[in-house]
Amino acid sequence: MSRSSLPADELPRSCENCGTLLQGHYCHACGQPTHSPVRHVGHAVEEVFESFWHLDGRIFRTVRDLFVPGRIANRYLDGQRVRYVAPMRLLVILTLLTFFVAKFVIQDAMQDVGPGQLRTDRVAVELDHARSAHEVRRLRGEALAGIADTRRTAGAGPGASPQLDVAEAEVRAHAESRIAELGAEGAAAAEGNAETPAEGRAAAAGPASDAPGIRTGAPAPPTIGGPIGERIERNVVRLGDEPQLFVRAVLGVAPTALFILVPLFAVLLKLLYLFQRRLYLEHVVVGLYSHAALMLGLLLVFCGALAAPWLAARAPWAASTVHVVQTALLWAMPVYLLLMQKRVYGQSWPRTLLKFAVLGLLYFALFLSVAIPMAGYALYAL
Image 1: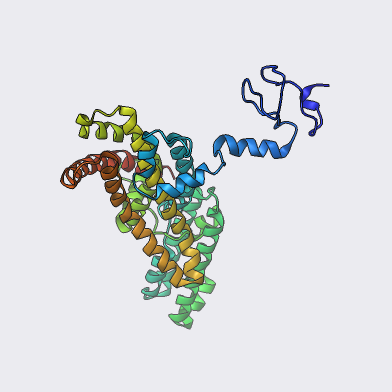
Image 2: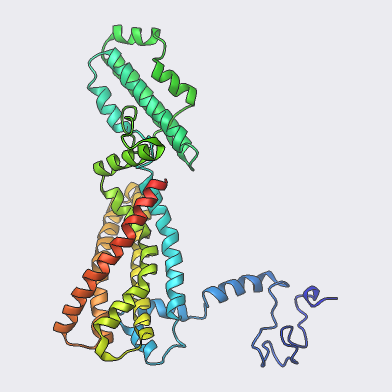
């Protein structure tokens, strides 16, 4: 019988890794435990969490002390390392969590800038201003043609088809209501007429949807040329109408950009505090814990962004509170970094403020140089 086929309650007498005679549940020579993840599901789950999180109380203690600027960095640099999660491990954990949540936030933002989309609210406004049944049918045909175009370019995305179906139903219903308002003669003519060519193309493409964010009218021919040019031009127009979408996209890629910039942040600290004769890796530790705090703040902001729509429909006062907390967290981030820089490096306030201003300007420029192209690509790639 192989060792891997032993009963779960029967432990080996010697270490399966190095062969040393065991005297307990851990090998005193190599440290491997006797519990095998291939013999017990509970041990397998425990091993996954232990190797990644090390859930022995340190993660919770680390997150708690992370809220105090500079505390963990000072203690870690002073040699008190066993009580905290290592800075790189902590940053990786928080980055993965923040990145995962941010994907939902940026995906929600991108739903408004997909290629070929129409805004049904704008369609409704144009239909309300139509002065004849013929004009209503023309606008309806253009809107349905645009929805059909959306279905061809983005209809395969998750949740796109149901949205498009709702959009088409809304456009048709609003058009019929407007025709009825224009008089019995216009309504009778609409019922007797066949669909316009544009409507026929839309029907041939299949039922269409409403995605919040649909533009009226068939897309104009691109001036750049080809599908790439068409997609770029459409997204540029939509971002011009709703620039907050790009801001949300930048926030969505912020976790990745912050993670990439940690080494450069440490370089800036090294240059600004050159005469303190600290090792570069000491500045890396400060950078890692600084970015871990930023990542934790972003994680809370993104969680609030996901919870706000649900709360707005059920408890508007709670949604308002969430927005206040999100704003406070965003403003607290630079204040946190300033206090951490003062506490770790221990210089006077005038020197600290001057160096913080220089560091902030340089780092902000680096962040934008990384985040803006990433956000632009993310919006384009939808």
